[in-house]
Each structure stands twice: as structure tokens, then as C-alpha cells.
Image 1: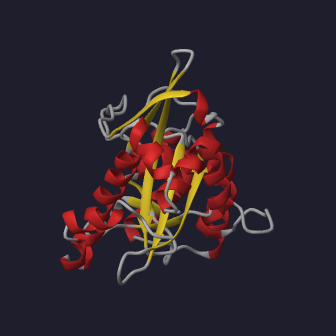
Image 2: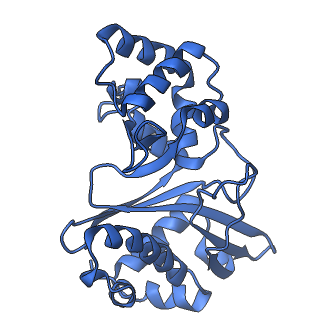
Length: 260
């Protein structure tokens, strides 16, 4: 389906003429601006709902997800002005949509926006010390094995026993690790708009960055998406988490990057 807003944004950021690395960075800005443009005003939402476009589908999906009748909405706004996390780190929320209701209630919808042409998308990249502290991993053997993974940049030097040991000992912390990876909080209901409650993910073609498909997930839905296979069984990859454990360029031996 065609988009009414994306062609202008792609042109504004000169996406077609950027190298792959620069394009990947700028596409993050494009899709944050895309959501802000869709929900920048009530009149804009009404106009988009009159057309057959991807924006219309996104608007309908958002209202279905948050279980709000659009007829009860008096105003709508979107913002990229997100507070930093309590630790001082960057927020995981990219855009907040504010929905104003008839009863004077204001509903905040904090969204993490992801776009990728790969099978998985990067969510978090931190050193093991920080990961264990923020997730609440107290098993020293788990920490030791994670540090080995960090030093080597992979599990290539793990014995079969070590791989199984990490998988088994990590299980009590697996869901918290996934939740922290995608929201930056291991809590089920963290307080603050800096922690997203929703993930909007766009799958793009590698060559032209056109949208192949998109999905709007709650955090619980995305945890299941990462950790469970199509049959609903727990994935064995990522030491039983379903996450891909890797590292970004220049951080080998210093940090672990999680993709999902």
C-alpha cells in the first residue's frame, strides 16, 4: 500500500543518495518523523483516514491496540521530546503519542520505532556489568560466562558444557533480560514515558528501503515474538532467550549487543 507522507520524508533526508551506513542511521529519523507527522493533530488524522494509505492502517491499528474509540478523542499530538531514564541513559521510547479524551483524560502512548531490512534488529548494547546490574542477574557463574562471551565476541570458545550451563542458569532471568533489552527496564510496568509500552516495527527492502510489512506489538507480544517459535515453544537460540548475541563494530571485547 502507498504512503502519503514517506516519499517527502525520504526526499527530505536524501535517502536514495546515502551510503548504506548513513542510510541506516537516517532511516531511524525518517520513521520517527513519520509517526510524528501521522499523529501531529486531530485534523491530520482525520484527513489520513479518508485515504487508502499505510498511514490509515497505522492509525486504525493504534486505536485498536490501545482500545480507545476514536469518537471519544478530542485531540491528538505526537512528540519526540522524551525524558532520559532515571539512570541518566537515553530513553528507549522514540515517539510519544498523546491522546486527549472527552473526560479530560490524557492517554500517553510511548512507542519504540524500529526499521530494518534484516531478519533481526538491534535493541541494546551494553557491558556485562551494566546488563547484570540492571536486569538483576545475581548468579555469578552466569555473569562469568557472559563476560567470556563479551571478551571473545561470541560463544566460539565455549565448550558444549559451558553453552548448556549458561542456557540453564540464565533461565530464571531470561524474560527479564528480554524485557530489559527492548525497554531498558526489567520491570513489567516501569514508571515513566522513557520506557516504551509499544513497538512499531517496519520491515524494509534492502535496496530501496520500501516497506514490505509492519507490525505494532505490545511489549508482551514482542517478548513472545522473540522467545517463542511458531509452535509456541521456547526458542533454544541465544542461550534460551531467542535473542541474538553479538557486538557492534568497534566494541568487541567491551560490550554485548542484543538483537531480536
